[in-house]
Image (cartoon, rainbow over all chains, first blue to last red):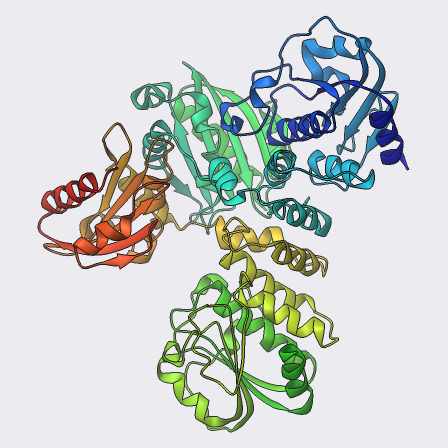
Length: 318
Length: 318
């Protein structure tokens, strides 16, 4: 079994590097730091890397500040690439792949192109953190609280708090074993899911005040302008999840969030629940995405953009 | 073991009633309907009761519309009382207890006063739904999708989506087994946690616009007046969770939500994170609660109420 083979690589070597993808999310960071803490604890030399700056939200994770952004001059016995469907996801750190005797690719994306010497892609795993858990356990090791904090974070973020369809009974069993280490998982959840900045609350108030409803309240449109961001001292990231306030309305089938990029240029996020294929709507504006979540860039003033998008949604109504 | 004894009562009898507490929450409704569906499926006669109207949010649960609010003229072999620490929680349905040969009390509150003929109180259970799961499994029965939907709802609501400290590895293992029945748990989570009404979004905008911060952004105050509710077509329940928008701000230690009850009378909700005992503050105004969540009624106009509460918080600052 490949996880045993990877376990043997760990047991037989000493110098490791770990890297994950650009724009790292909770799974990239949590699985990287989970493996990093584990390898440290069993006495290995290990460097953790990421091609981007890590979001500060994750700074409670053990080892957070050890993660390097630039290559150090070192040759590794083995490098782990986590949560990357291909090596382009490593950005400028792709060079790392030439600095190790063995490259191990651990991922859960079906699109993984098996770029490494050893590849383990488990598309049934809700998060790469689940695979790291199995790797540690199957090879007879224990999981410390530090490692558990990181792997729990990986799993709980990539499964949307165990709400998404990628959650399996294995996901939940693993999470149960991780909380049995005694980690403060309510606090981890609070940090990950229930934390707002003052700027976000102010922005939330302004953005939700723009709510407009169409077609018997089945289409909801909200927007944010650059002026609104400025008035709240907020940035674009603060607005990133606000499309949910349009989509989550009980009567709504399509939620639309329009964000001013610059004068005359707007980024439009589209979400649907059951019927409308919003990817087809986004494609009309040269955008893309998935059936239930898509995006596109539309030009014009705010009212023009709103009308263009609304008309296209109404054209696709079944 | 008591769960086997209760299993034998189920196997040896035919006519059952199930009841839970006033102001039913997800655990009351989910555990009632979980047991109701199970008993139906194994061929028993069963009536489900609740002393209050069930929130419509739960109308997706199988058996929802079968739940009775008034006693029918019938004698039962056995009545199950779920999630009730004492029989006063049954309101006008307390009479049911006189209409059965055996009363079985299944609960997870440490305060349970063991009022029944057979009492099973598992204070380690995150939800009564966990106990119903164990009752079914330990006695050798299968769990259908219908029953699983109800028990999953019970567990996921009472543990705050597996975020609260009452979540254990057993909770997560049970949830894993329930989702293995093939229930659409992402949709259940969407209904339970990610659904807003138009009125709630409008109210959210108004309430968050009242945000005031004190003591270096460590105290956040928001409020709602009866006029604001009316302008949004909203009711008091629509405002029930809004204190979270004050508490969840990253810099905040104490979040305050002030709700106008009538002219000159305000209900104040207090939440804290790590330091301040908000129960002590609430008690100054003859209120009560817990260290991290408390409430009280304060008289005066809005500014007076705000100042009284703020001064009391500042008095308790450590």
